[in-house]
Image (cartoon, rainbow over all chains, first blue to last red; front, side):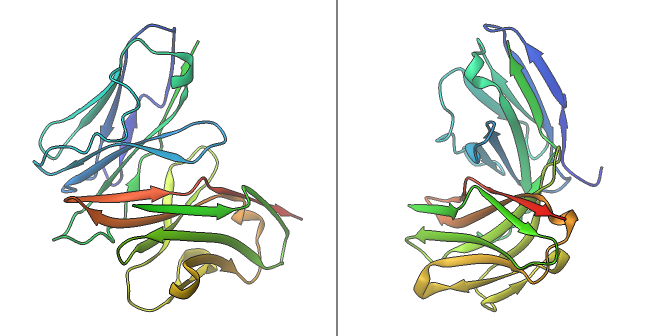
Length: 117
Length: 115
């Protein structure tokens, strides 16, 4: 595909259930980011994958959150034992990381809207 | 450490009026600065970015921003607002830290255009 895709687009779950969100980055993009956007708030960084390096997990809010990425392809964000405060839009972005250039443009997916009842 | 401050979570302008969305940043290293726009029910898309070339950056849809190091600002402007500009705008700063590209977003400014 031409852009970043995310699935599902919407997810409604019950408190205490686990959810898995998927992100397909743009082919060839080595960097992948997950963000959380709560209603009325800005983007909150969650985790960053860069090629085969260890991911930057500094933004994960609790140990209920985890993410994986296989090589430079699909990533999944898993939230275990969901809580109502996890309700948000989860955005994924990818970028073509050059040689140490921090000015890379991020390309965002449409997001997954998660509602925890 | 880096941070972004967007002044005004909501801005209203009349159609045809000047749009000014404010962004101030702090960064311990030379920053790269971005403006992203998010239309309703869509993901963010790049509007423009500053990467240490020209200080006045022109983006899509007639928007531009000027990097002012002395003021640590990167305000977004458009001479004449159009109804289609109604969206949420995010300022972001990026720098390398500890081997990772750290991108920090502001809280966003919702732009309302009044006919």
